[in-house]
Length: 141
Length: 402
Image (cartoon, rainbow over all chains, first blue to last red; front, side, top):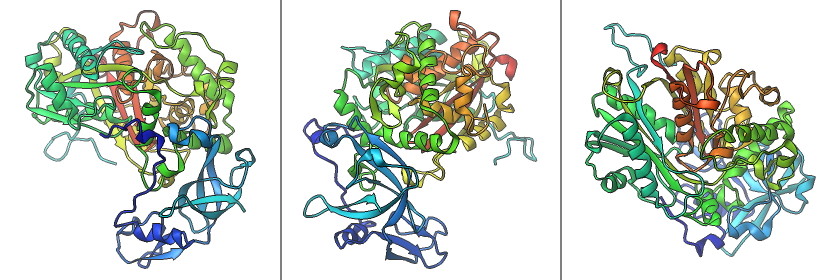
């Protein structure tokens, strides 16, 4: 198992795209949240992978999501997971139910976490955290 | 579901009653400065061997979990070297909090299949004094996915918090009911020698203990501890005569893995514990109403409420009221975590659930003194981890239940 170096604990973890997910992370740089659509069974899935989790087929295409969804659940973090997120507290982690079906983890922007309610509508915000990485966050719609 | 009935040739495909826990022991737990993870593991292993009346050389199999504060990839192998033994069966398992139960399932299957005779199960870690609290927390965050979860600052508590939060929305479960879980666990810990937290607490104390991640307050969350637990598992045939301690038989084991990412959990409020427990009950040939005492993974208060439902101790959505009615303590329907659990006894990480096993074994042996559940013959331990991604149910019993 990996042991975290104390210096590393102060740096926010950022995604490193792999062969499956390059299109996804590239899409976010263009302002698009890409979902995979299976042309064999019609399943829509998040996250990107080589096979459809429903039918096992490999005929998958990328399509941009509408960016609309609802808050299926949430938790407002007051005690950060390590020093890297301390200055952000309180912040809201969201479990977003996308209009197309899949769910994803994200975080709330442009609103007070205290205003969150279950099933409230939210919309995608593409948030550039550095010159290489854009994170998909959500704000009240 | 798998059928556990004999097949056409009369062969039974089940580990029911094939093996028994013949030795059990633990190290010092709680805040244990000045002891390495391996030293804690060795202390627990020596206690388990002493309990069984076995020498080190009689151990031919070792199964372990991993440790954050001693990050050996092959902990079971590293421990064997430290302990001075040369096993001919070994593995280091990792399915987060459910690892404890999987060690018993694999030990039982390995012994039934002739791979080993006496298997030492050991889990150890030093999360409280072997890592700074920041590093301990961050280490657990690292167990979330690097691309789709970690960048959003999702602590390990957060995945469980979101499930509990939705449970409140869907079933009207209240913060006070969550708090009641913590209060009852503290009552239990007060009777248990060696418990880390023994100050009495009230529902208001829990509600005023400060937010960690909503809807969880500090006292809704389990402890961070040091400690190790070990067991010896042997074949049932030998268990009857070859060991000092009263054997406790492994009657059923079931596991279920519904997802890895929290966003792919099929339902936030009904978990794979439904499937894992159904398999364990079917193998053991019993039902929830038959269980006398339980160890239910209590990483957070709401986790217990959800598991009471999924394990079949109460109907879906009624876990909060079940706890409010004190059904999880002495005199109730199913006394749970009579040692105080991860919430008040100790939570040394991976070995945490092994402490539930230790308590249920001691209850079934009838050696729990003032915290004894009278007449306990059949026990259940439910282990889980990783935001309900990993689930494992084990049913244990005395010779009378075979």
